[in-house]
Length: 187
Image 1 (cartoon, rainbow, N blue to C red):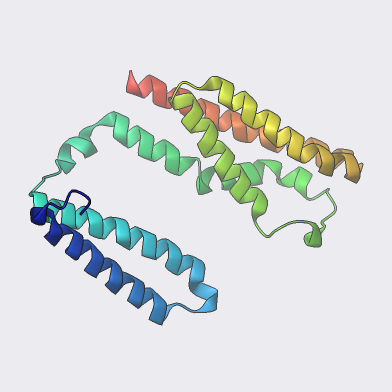
Image 2 (cartoon, rainbow, N blue to C red; image 1 turned 180 degrees about the vertical axis):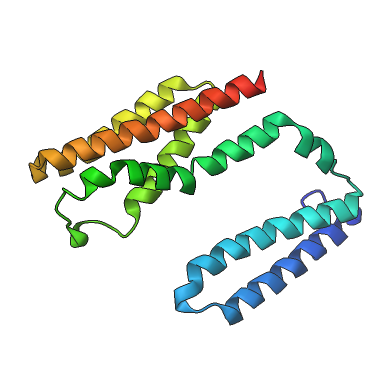
């Protein structure tokens, strides 16, 4: 559209119409409780429609078999998925004996925030290692320490401090090992 190439207008129209249809569907079907789910689905459908339109208009072909047969791609997908929910479950079970001894303060934390923080930090650490940015791992650990320092200083709860430290080290360690495994697969 920016180049005023008339041959490209069917692509723009197709994208605009599919986006309109997806947004209308979301607008009329989402409820206040399902806004997050619909937002994620909406974004996924937008990306999928762009991919389908691109393939349709350019006659591009994707060799899925070569992608599936590539151990690097399979390793990447497997390790990224492993670092999300499965690792959260493993770490939760490893830390359970200590978690039970820490007094619960439900009004002090967002529901499942620790789980999502852990997933994000593992994905960041993995990405930093895979891209060769080890110093960013140190920066992330320092940043997390700065944010946690105030909470831990106020709580004066040694058990909580130890629990967070063990959890952080296990989380970072798991992501580092996953990153090193990927690098060895990629060689």
